[in-house]
Length: 506
Image (cartoon, rainbow, N blue to C red; front, top):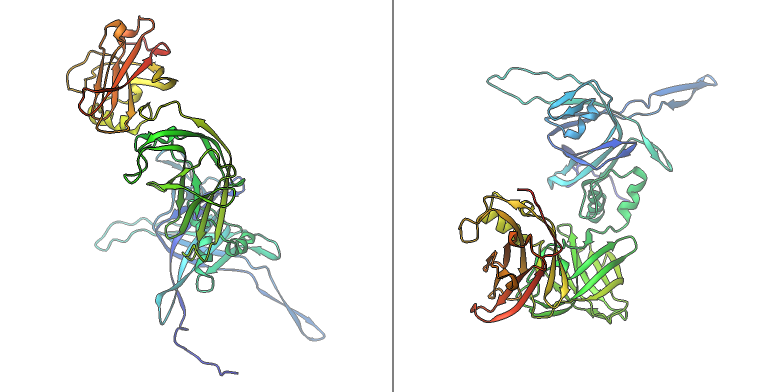
């Protein structure tokens, strides 16, 4: 047995400060997505009730009963989030106009206080405070003249709480979680729920959820499909996949993976790839260790190519039935010894489609981000939507395509060479080049003897003026691909314009 010791080193504990306020408005009886509450200056907790009521019998004090305890508090701050207005009895019929004396709505509230000691100062830890069923009363606001010692006005609200159910316990108004008593991994889990992460928006967990959140490993990653308009080398994501979806609950991916040929790869280290490519976007919270791998049915590892922005390119040969994507997370950072979360995504729902484009052929696209960049730079007074609506390119095989959609009449448009071009109707699209030293040229249908197009050979953008085709039948646009010398013709692409709509308005 040991004797008591007072004021031991490291046991001079104290609490200080208040920050990281979060407001959780209530709509239709449910807590909504949390929003940051900046400018907190003080939170004063003022519980009431639990008053003693002495009971006498046999001429003695027999027992003491206590009244129900209630939770009250005062919030003080320099400002508040816009979402708090309804909680404070204010509604806005239009921007900048606010009506007071309206119904006050309930909300949840969370904030953080610091824990210190004589060794670590104010950085020994922190306590998260969660308050449920809050409503506030009207409070005084004092506006004063600016003087030689100006001070910002502090808002103040008196808070009452209606406790919520917590099975196995009495109803609860407040919960605290102390980081000096809970592991960092557990604190990261509850903070990911409160503050949001890549896996979900900020939310207020109910009291009975909290033990499960703290004791159950949580995924700090999100698996999704990249934007199909994203360009990677000489392809866009749409060239790899069609309608691919990720189902986290079922642990599966579905959709179509296309076989691409002649892909330049996600970086300079790999070139000329021809295979089934499944792009997977893996987002993770900062500081977390997460790994993506692809397994075959027998457990063998399949190849992946690492790209930018968290995108990995899974090479899934068509004959690998039973393949799946595996995501592993380690809270300690050691994936070799400590895998905290493991999630598999079955690929049996993936269908395979052969690409109709040969290995040496460029593919046109209307969704390239380069088109917008070109318009912003060369023609800032026009947008792609000014030129065309719902323009799509259909691959009909053998380097032949159809242009579908509508081209509009525009005025004041100039060519690539800063020469004035007649007003008219234009279509714009871009080729994803397999070799950026190549060149392109375009002209009207040779059968009609026209050359009613302009082009940008430097960025593989085709800007075609199409007015000359409005009254013609069987009209087409021809685009040529040349080698770097501009002489050797490599490919000829034909675009059928019969399915194109010409806007008649001028």
